[in-house]
Length: 571
Image 1 (cartoon, one colour):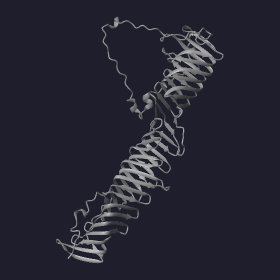
Image 2 (cartoon, rainbow, N blue to C red):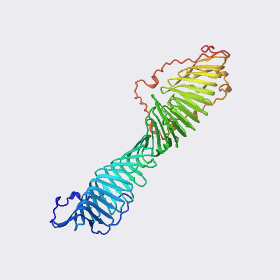
Image 3 (cartoon, one colour):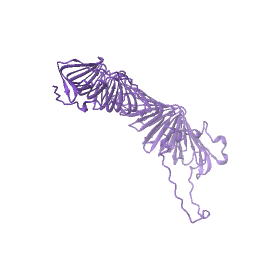
Image 4 (cartoon, rainbow, N blue to C red):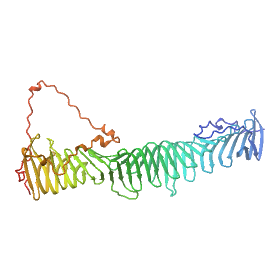
């Protein structure tokens, strides 16, 4: 009589319905069921329990069905149902390539389904998987677990709460709390975490769809869709891709990054954010050299935005090159290069040139090849130029070779200063002083009030200093060998109204909208709108209103022809 200490087979030992096969998996036809054959047992007992014919097998038990072998220390064999319940040292082998071991097993010979529980280990030539419960379809050659699993191959370890493995395609699908650790040739680890990951155990490529973070010694990567090759260590991100380092953040719609060569290519809404000095670069395409600390952005007029104090500087060009700290170097001066067709916009200051260098550490911008800078009503030109900023405000401009400054006055005439070199000083975004160094010439108009021109001053000197108040010439001082002339209005001739080289280029002055382009179009909407003043109804008719009294401002005292003005006595 057969004794069954465990009673009838419990429902929980039967395999649950498995997840759908992975995309592309071959759905093999279900073969005609064959009986599971007993190959060996040290002791065999038989009988009928509750109308079911059962064999109890003890000691070195072995079964076979087609390409499947099952080994255990003891088992119950249900002959009519073609099922086996195995105990202790359970092992299933299929085609000599895949092995599953565990403490307790259940096998359905008609459906060719196996369920293993306890200390479950699944091995094939490419990987080892451990879990506490595993279901395996021997016809489709697919396995899955839902209670947490740990996969190991020579270079990778992977953990997840759920997993599905297709032994035909050698593809794993992991879900919930996925954690992949990959080692390179030098033993450095790359850590990947997300909630859904597909891993090909042949190509060693991980495919992910959803928020994914990859951490390594060279920086952190983030994306919401893409692939990661654990052999070549190349990441191919397709959605919201980012490279995050202690100093900056590089992102784009699509990002390909090689962790071996430390080289990346980004396309679509590319941005580089410097965390230390609040500088943002945006464009359509980017190249990144991590070892050199360089990022090149181009395509669709990339733009730089840097915020300092209350003012924001925008800089656009066809190509931007940012140089940051190199690997292994503690200190690196951050520099930005821009070329060609550079445009600048910052409050009342605008500029353009062919190429530019921005020393972000010292807040100095160097403009090369035909630079032009407009500041309020002033235009500055020279062969090359440098702009120094202090606390976010333009403090000084150095004009090198063929320096020329033009100021438009309130009656649309043009005050002019030229010389070999110049230094222009600014205070609160207004012109404060100009030092002309070599071959100095000046031409400025005197006004009666702000609306009537009264005369024209022309002067020549080796060196010259002009002082301003409210963006108007207040004082002119000649320092060496001065010559000065004054022309009243009726004596001013057309040829006397311009110094040689005069060119008013206001039509080239870039607007805020043009400089910001599409990359910072959202900033255009952030400008505070001026509040409309409420209309106040007056009982007095417009004709009866008294006219406001005003006293005209005095212009510099007109000089006598051939002599300097009283306010500008030569030193």
